[in-house]
Each structure stands twice: as C-alpha cells, then as structure tokens.
Length: 73
Image (cartoon, rainbow, N blue to C red):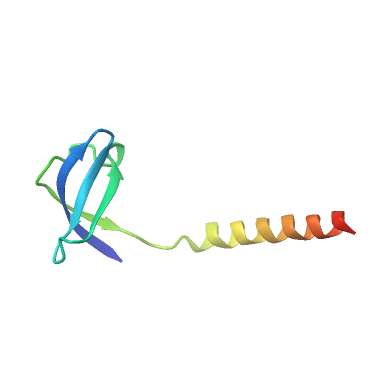
C-alpha cells in the first residue's frame, strides 16, 4: 500500500500530514523520518507487512505463553 500525503505543517518534533484526496484525514509523523522534506511537500509513504518479523514475534509470544502456563502448574 502506498499513501500519498501533503506535509501540512511542522509542530515541534512532528509533521502533520494530510491524506491526498481526503484531507480530513491527518496523521503525525516524527520529523526525523522526513529529512529534506518541508511544509507543502507531497510525500509517498509505502507500507508493507514484514511477514518474517511478524512470524518471529508470534513465535516468541507463543513461547512466552507456554512458559507462563508451565510455571503456573
């Protein structure tokens, strides 16, 4: 998924972005992710699921749950 947004303004450590096509939708993004980007600039933000990291996190959590179950017996 790709999000296209306009940098509306910078407020301290955050940039306020407005979704292109529906500018009622706004979200904040830390300015450290926007080096060289300024108010009024249009940005593309790609979002994709990290399948490997998700699976690893699920396995880790399941392991912790099993450990707690054994400890509770």
